[in-house]
Image (cartoon, rainbow, N blue to C red; front, side, top):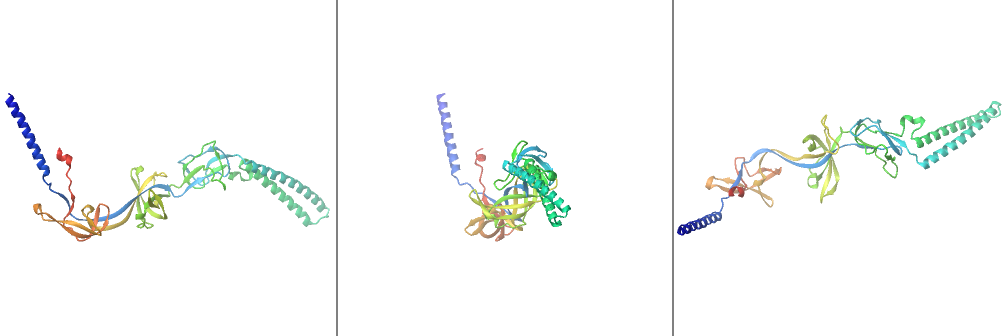
Length: 372
């Protein structure tokens, strides 16, 4: 029994030794190099670039109040369509005390001047009836009375506007009513009822009551790298894709290229704008992220091969043309003249025919597959 056990162990050791030897021998043998092979194709070559940006209205207007005060009512909400002149909100005036005091002083002075003008006119009227003064002197007193009456009315209007934001003479154009200055969609109303608002002046921009824009006139705004901006011209067609709308696409035309670069992440970028041709009933919102595809160059019906089949040496380009078949197969290095590339395929202008086959990159075997 012990004799058989020793023989079995010896056999197992021998098998392991032989298997290891065979494995190492196979590993030491040079592997056959296999290459991809490509036949040139005749097709169009397009060089394009993708610009990332966003969609926004060409004209977005911030509607601001004409008086300072408190919001008492908001009659519209974001997403509503408004016509120019339509009321968006109402403001209760909180008058400036210095202006209010000045307006009240003006009214008191106007009352004093008016009372004196009436007395002077009445006195002049009695003298004129008795033919003791000339008609010219009488007309001067009449004119002075009329001027005093007008000044009193203007002072009253000014006081009402400062105190209440509206006067009897301009009730229809009340400055307490915040109206849209253009026709369009309300994009945002950043205030609420009860918020204090201030009018625009020399020292501040004023409070924005609403942002209104014409959503039928949209533009694409993005940045392009300085290495590609030289190939752009105004009027170039673009294809705009909005990912948020299930890759909805629109045509656009380039209309603006910034003359000045802006540094972004260490690279010089130039701003571009394109007019977007919006389809009817398309629900585009301001601020959507979008990609613009721009065709920088193209060649029709060019002889092409994959760019991976090209070997670059200095300023020269080469391909390896397949010669023979089977074990007699060889590869002949040949200089070619290349043209436009789209990043995958490249145009061959000279040095290769459509009937020839070229060598591509080496086929790399999947190690995991081999082990399995």
